[in-house]
View (tube, helix red, strand yellow):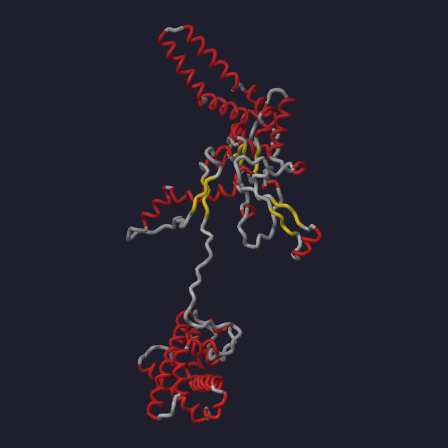
Length: 459
C-alpha cells in the first residue's frame, strides 16, 4: 500500500470517468447520430450532435465530475453494512456501518456480522451509486480507493483535485460517508420496531421503563457473503466435482450443495433502489432452512448417566405386554397346566424384549460408553462387551471373561420381576417368595442358554 502514488489514484479515476462516458446511453446515441450525419453530409446535424457530445464530455470532465460528486451528490449516498432500505425500499431510517464498531470477543457460537473478519461495504442512494463505484475501483494489488481512504493514505487527497482546498474538502466528505451519525438518529415508520427489556426481570422493565427501542436493519453485507457462498454451487469447479461423483476409478472432490433454500426478493421492482449489493443480487436473498430438527423417538428406553440399573420402571414399560400377560396370569383362577403355560408365554415376551433392548445398546453405543455411567458393574459387563477390547481395560476384560456377572444378572432380573409383582398386587406379597424368585432366575438362565445356542452375541 505504501507504493501507491497520487498519480496511480488519479489515473484510475480518469479511466473510470472515461468508461462512464463511453457507457452513457445519451453519449452512445449522439455518437451514432454523428456518424450517420457525417455519412449523409448533413453539417447541421453534425454540429448539433458534436455540440451535445461536448456537453456530455464536460459533465465527465475530471474536475467537474469530482466537484459534483463530492459536493452536491455525496449527501445522497450512504455507505454501511446494515441497510434500512433492505427492510423497506422507501425507508428513510439511519443505516449502520458495523466495520467501524468494536466486535464482541465472545460470540457464543452464534453466527452474526461479528463472525466475519471483514464485511464488504454496501451503499444506498441509487442516484449516487456511481460515486460508490469510483470508491471501489482497484488501484494496485486489489487495494481500492475506499481502502486507501479508510487507511488515511497520504496520496489520496492530492489525487482528488488539483486545487488543494477542494481536494481536502472532498476527502473530508468521503470520510464522513464511513461514519455513523448517531447524534441525529432517525427511524422510520416503515421499519419494524420493538421494545427490548434491559432487565431479566420483566416486571422491572414495565415499572421502571427499563427498556430500549430496537430498530432491526437488514444485514446486507453479511447476506451478500452468504449469497456468494451459495452461488459457488454454479461454479465450474463445483460442477466438475459433482460430475466426478458419478465416475468410478477417479478421485472424488468435495463440492457444495445447498438443500431446501428459499428466496425472498428485496427492493421491490428495482432492487438497486434498496442498495448496491441487493441490486447486484437482483433483489434475491437466500434463506437457509431453519426448520426445527426432526427427533425420531426411539422405541427403546434411554440410559442416563446417573441411573444405577436398567431394571427399572422404564424397562418394565418397554416390556409391558409381557408383564400384562404375567399380571393376568396371577389374577386368573388357578389351573396348574394353564398357569404354567401362561407364565412361560409371559416370560417369553418379557425376556425377548429385554434381550432385544440389550442387543440395541450393545450395537448402537460406542465401545467404552459405560465408563462415564453409574450402572451396576455387572450390567456394564453385559451391555458394553466391546469395552474389554480397549486399552487400559485389562481388569474389565478379566471380569467379563470370568462370566460371573451372568449369575448377578439372574438375581437382578428376578428382583425386578418380583418387585413389579409386589407393586401390582400389594395384598398378595406373600405369594411371591423364594420359590417364585428361583423360578424367575431359571427363566432368565434358560433365555441366556437359548441365546448362546443361537449365537446371537448378546451373552
